[in-house]
Image (cartoon, rainbow, N blue to C red; front, side, top):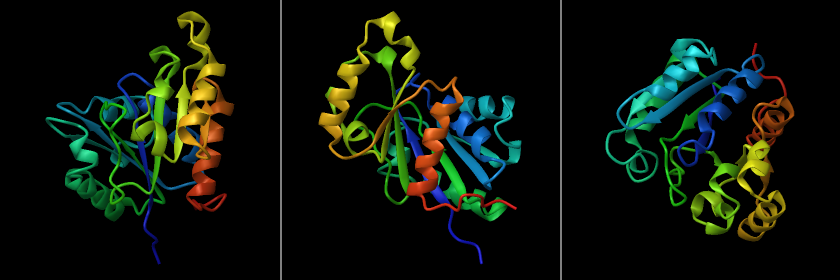
Length: 206
């Protein structure tokens, strides 16, 4: 009997590292889990092409959705285009995990609960240490906040201590992680969160 896939929404501003995170997660999880990806771009399929080019998964497991207009609507108010993509991928591959990467969005964007079971929200240090305290649903309500590109902190004058303090203040008990996606341990922390919170078996794929 096939169970419904765990749908993991990945959101965040343009350039924060969403696609790099999805690529790293695919590489880290594909040998243990049956995975598919749906990406969102406004007028292109650039992110899907990037994942395919970099060998994240086989091409038939990566679907690019062209949202047109406002990318926020496609993951929240009218998620039908993404829901259809999830259904198609589920029928095609029966995945255990589907990553749904939003188009570039702002701090107010959130995933519809109909579309995503777990939400990861990615911001980056290059955006400045003030980003966590700006709030917004992505910062305050995502299941996991990922503060990426910590290696850039010295170059942009950002204090990780200030970002940690503000993230804790804005999120309360909700978890957050500092990452440098060029390093394997950073990715593994995110994998561990998905496996634990998504109630995935430690080794699921045949």
